[in-house]
Image (cartoon, rainbow, N blue to C red; front, side, top):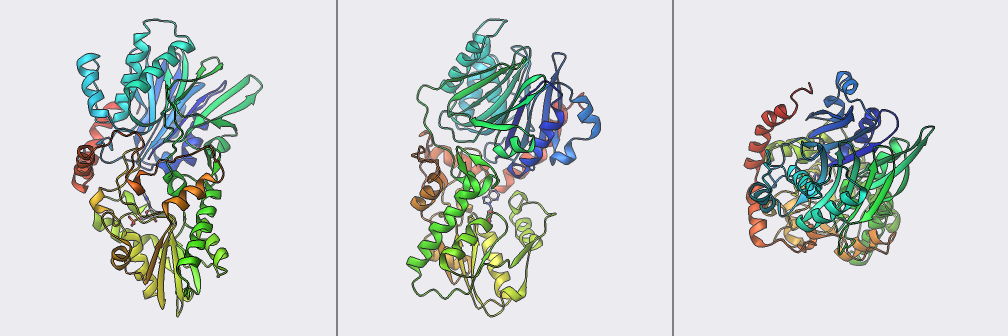
Length: 505
Ligand code: AMP
């Protein structure tokens, strides 16, 4: 998963882009980048690492200009694009720089086509560089030096025709302005906002509304699926629906885990949806565990806290914090290799024994992926003296890989893949286990926006909304997602990024 921001202002944008990326840091901790336009020239800084480590004063000083975009990256394993920092740059036409959140499902085909038919070379394994070149190609087809907003929208309509998958995108075009667009299913989120200054309006686009808040922009609206928004260098806003058959299918996992609770995506408060998930799951527990003897509900920090509190309230049980999180350690998921991952759960969380001793506890997590976290946490709860350990997941069983930009392990590594409830319960060592149903999860999220009739829920049901995913694609993904290939592509990262940074150091 990645995060993107873009601003067209009338004052320098470097600090706001930095602030925007910082509040989106939860969407990716792997690499960060900002590009601005100054004197018709791109100024770029990108490197591996957290936002606070990538940008030093000397970089910020060089990132001059009133227009710019930024990106933070979470390696989207399986596309082999895990190693390239964004934004990317292409010199033709005009000079374009692009940042992308999502994953293209026909990337191989497009890369081949670009080389053979459009004479465009893609120098990395990133699908985002492919998207940049497709956009470049389509802009070039217009054949005009002076682009009108309609020329840009026509180019994006053609991008939608060629490209499949998930893409929330922001791009700068030298001499023209900034364009932001969302795939025709609206799988990945994209919002835009406005800020009035003495010199006129400034505009910002971002993956989540929380970035607008942090930069003092007022939320205007979500970018619609298939829509493009173009803001010219002199601050004129234009927008157009560029997809032939747009459909509204946002990724439900944004609400389950990825997005910050203080964001609203597609008119749905992420926090509110997590509370609803807790309500639904609490009701399911009350119904299915008639003889429940739970003494206390304990969340596995932090994402699950909002749902866990609501479960406790629904069941009329006490809610207590039983685990303390070390804030200064990275997410377990991003550690290479299973052994590292196992150790880091212990390094990340510690149990408060008094909350467990002699009690039947219900532990709540937002989701179970590999099951490593749940297994170890259940062990920790028992070691801290719990009598019985029950486990509830606010999301349904994750059984299928994600092909739209969420870093999920290969299907075979998912604990729920090909297993039923009892198998999973036994493997993680719980006394009882319960998952949210898919219908309840959808209802919990949709309650705030009934216009969304179908979410992108493939990790739970294997139904891929773009309808282009076959067994061959999944097998290829599976091979790419094994640990070996991930580590290899990470090792290759440095040389590629060094090359892109020439002149930026
Ligand atoms: P696991 O040990 O693999 O079952 O990890 C489950 C935990 O990982 C849950 O507590 C989630 O909060 C978190 N999680 C879920 N999906 C992801 C993801 N795609 N990347 C990183 N962490 C995740």
